[in-house]
Image (cartoon, rainbow, N blue to C red; front, side, top):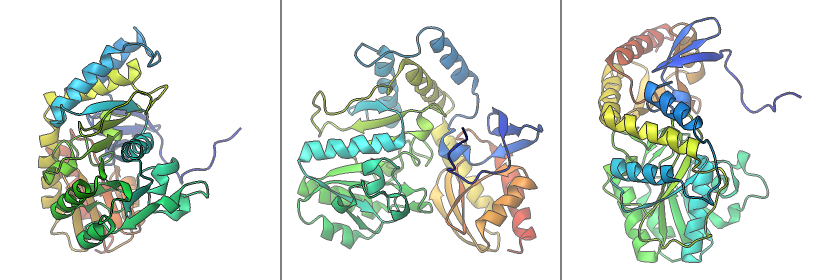
Length: 378
């Protein structure tokens, strides 16, 4: 048997990691400015994380959700404290797509409606409804119910208000910063307009914080920059630093009913231990504030480089529009300077480093970026 061909793979296999660094089979060190697609929040193999998971595994790793699991309660309390959303309820699952799937289902259950309003260029996952609200027909199969979804452009306030002038929508789903869509930031005006329109029509406002959340933007949730309160918040990626955990945070405005949502593996003992360890480190090391500060230093360090068309994002979620194809630029960064970065489209470099990077790592990246830009004739 061979592996199903899913991705075009880089010619590099990491076999060891620590903090913001990776090492390949040949022992070459790489600076990780991609964080495994925004997943690594507290850094690779953090001692508290490793200890917490190992200790839990030596006790009990899994039992079904038919029994009491006090670790779920502990995680909910820590997440409420960190986020400032301590009046929300928490549903634990296994991935970001699953979190969005359950959020959309919850909205439909609550309102009795079928339709969803999503954003152009959005990405919310690859499961049935999650991919239906993703603006990419190439990954939507005939079975996906896209006929129940409409799209408007992010930050087009008038189009949003027009679509939400009736009460036909169960939910509006918005990424406060579009990741796959090129690090496009939802404006405060747009998010506030969405909140007002949802209130007026009884529509559920779902904020997808899967990539932008968990401190990455310099606030715990990126939509908190606007002061808007979401009905439902979805998260995954950074919540457990690589252990597969997804979550749905549900505001008091939505009445919970037993049997609405369910999961076999979600919120297992081991998953909760991983997520609790991350929450501990995020608080103890003040990683939300660090993300804000280091993000500002990165932007300040590279903003005068000729050949940059635009820099977008918040905190450590940064998109850089280049005047040359990102693939060639990333190749030089990786092969010559040993720095891992991400992409979005043909010309956008995407930075999603661990939230614990320091000034040394930022300085190394800035110098490598400048050198690469010069080499590429930018």
